[in-house]
Length: 132
Image (cartoon, rainbow, N blue to C red; front, side, top):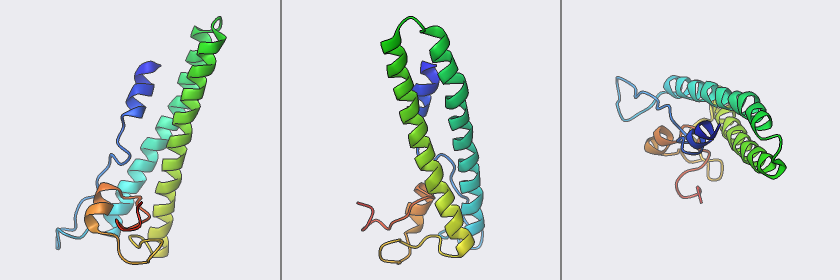
């Protein structure tokens, strides 16, 4: 169990990178972003599923006698699951924005988000100025 928790804690928020447009390598197409976001969504869903089934059951089975340790491990699992769900929400929001034609716009100033930022964080909601 600890290996999965360790791996999830040290997983990049955005593992899947979109591929640049062949005609303009500085621009990432919505289709490429959609593919990257879909892949990230599937990966996050798999991680949440693993946490909810394997890890929680293993914690209960291995440490029935040590209630405090079980509670601490369950809290850690639930915290990780909540973080993964928040990432899933961000990814779904970005997919919804692609569908609505508003992907890549800052939600505060409505200016375009830099392509570099979107490549690094495809689910980014804000430009660099408003990211704080």
